Image 1 (cartoon, one colour):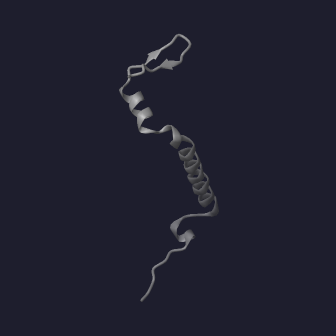
Image 2 (spheres, helix red, strand yellow):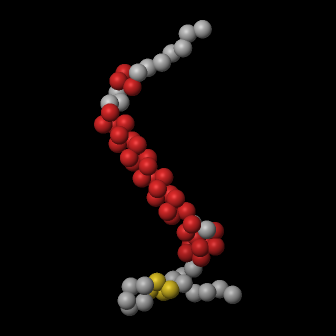
Image 3 (cartoon, helix red, strand yellow):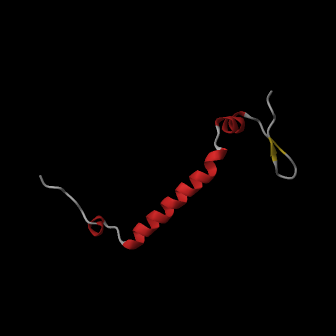
Length: 66
């Protein structure tokens, strides 16, 4: 049985592109980990279904539904 394999150079990856892939991949994982706690169902549905009112100072207020 023969295995088919290509080297990284044959694929077109050099050390710079591998470094950039790792940096952007790490940035994605970090940003996902930071924003995940804010993505709960209750908070997302509140933002999607609410009719917010914007105050004069630029902040947004969501009406509380009981």
